[in-house]
Length: 163
Image (cartoon, rainbow, N blue to C red; front, side):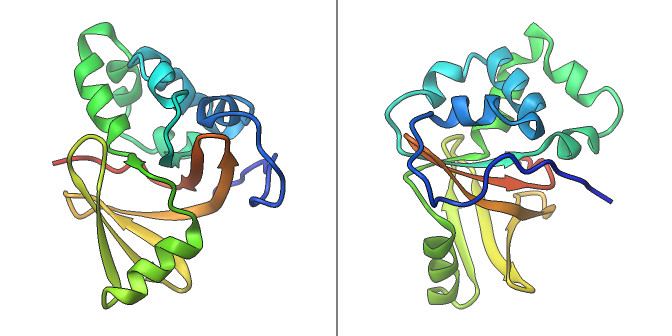
């Protein structure tokens, strides 16, 4: 069973930190922040945006096959790591209500193109937003609408993979 330390909740406060600052300030995203640094994406994700980041929590990275994260963090794997991380990022700010509305307005499924260029299919299951990657793997949004000055973060429980 997954346990998360919630250091922030919802969008009920003004957020002056960008996506990287918010993620770096939460222990649940330490692996993601390390990976973003290794892929040289910190500057990009600190930019004006807006961005929507479907951010895997540490447990999501830990669930990958043994050695995967260590291998991806090596300099020679930078392109692969960048592809995986940018597959979790969408241009524009899509808060949970807008995502749910798009899913409902499109017969229960809404495809969204990522910064990487691939597609993620969004749907609902038991009231939760689900992501399906290009390989058919599923992920659940476990913490929606984490506000940032340049967008929004939705924490997810599985690393999604491009084709």
